[in-house]
Amino acid sequence: MKSPALKRAAIGVRMHSGWGALVAVTHDCGAVDVVERRRITITADRPGSKQPYHFAETLGLAKAEKFVGACFAETERLASAALQQVIADLRSRGYRVDRCAIVLASGRTLPDLAKILVSHALIHAAEGEFFREVIRKACAGLDLSVTGLRERDLDQCARTTFGAAATRMRQQLDAVGRSLGPPWTADQKTAALAALIVLP
Image (cartoon, rainbow, N blue to C red; front, side, top):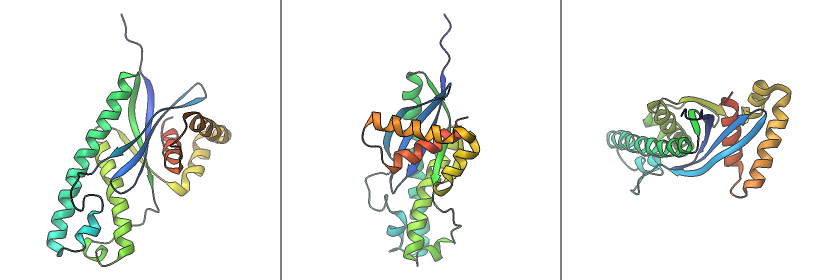
């Protein structure tokens, strides 16, 4: 007997220091549905893992480079495991995930590590980019197509992707979020919209 075809779903992620809000959505015959939402934790319980650049600030440059590199490798491994679990869980429920959208910040280019570590503002920016890049690498390792979308551009991206239907798509997401109940904050809303944009 032939197995039923898997429905396509896309994942959206909005990252924070050491964790991310993950939402998976489907879009079938004009209907939007949120099929998964969870918090993924991608850091080990050790000093500096949640704020690697803040921790590295207290080290010499050579030790800082080594620490940040080791922290990235470990965090990527944990992110990959978390994503694999999500994909496996969704597959067991009849969904196939082949793409991921990552909600980005401003997208400014960062200088080298030595310059980052002498600026508190750059340390914060680098940590945000660190965890987004970890997710990007983990997705690539799992053969997921990855798209980064700047948060401030999401509405325009939705209009470009869906045209006149963009407002209706947003309304459907809002309605689904209300029916699911909390948490349905800016984290989940932006992750869900980003996932919906890359799904078509």
